[in-house]
Length: 383
Image (cartoon, rainbow, N blue to C red; front, side, top):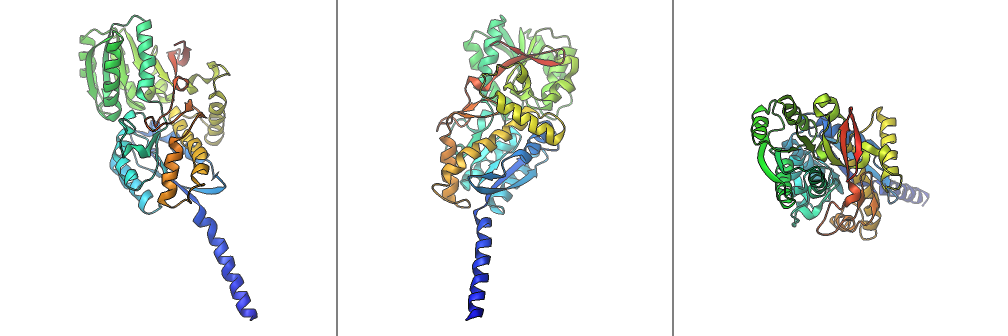
């Protein structure tokens, strides 16, 4: 009898010990920490170490991978996270082409994908697959509106467009062109280039030949510098505008004097000390920067904040989803998707999230500021 009691006690102990593992929340993180997209991906991978270790009373297990800026590897890693690790949500990949390539797999497994990428094409137009994606950066139209308003204020009547030949640049051309023309600004030249190109002299010469008052460059990370510098080196004197894809320290570091005078709309992080204390995101952005700097010894690119905000979204949505199901089930992932879509007035590092069924980015004007590069530092501009 004593042996049976002892055996039962041991069995109960083993079962109790096993429960926490079953209740664990699993999150995947895919970033481009190496390769051409490293300017974007390094700060995102590093930010992964700052993500919450506990959410809704559950321990969180993270599976972090580097896709080496290769869309094919992104697909392989996303499939691994879904089939082997059976994650409850995924943050990543870092780059727009990679994110576009993995949407179908996340949707098939009914797993929320929090995409820290630039292109709005990952969530627009909304459909049955994209409803599983939540974008943690500002949509292109929000940034475009600020840039166009500045162009109008500066008397710009004609503009040239140079964009990367991928979903980021393509969506920007699609969004910017009609908006500019509606504002009375004619797009007189449109050129494309590859992220890996070492020269864009041909594109720059063609754009300059159209004699535009200004030029907009639509790229992200390191590739933002090449067309900008080339235009300046070839003698272009008009104002050169950049999207939020240039919101990285490397833009200034790599571009040097050639990118002086650039005008950009992006989140408040690059001009945080110049933003009023009343801005809802100022404190949380400052806290994120301080924590990142303490851990890694350098300031993060704003791209890292996209991953940090993904963590904040999950912190808000997971407790809601837990009321309906447990992690590891399709019911939980569905409830998590629904909870993310219901996010209201959640303050992040770059703005305030208000998600809807039609808008899975959720930023309003509080998610952008206008700035110009002067003497190697970004200066806040009034919109």
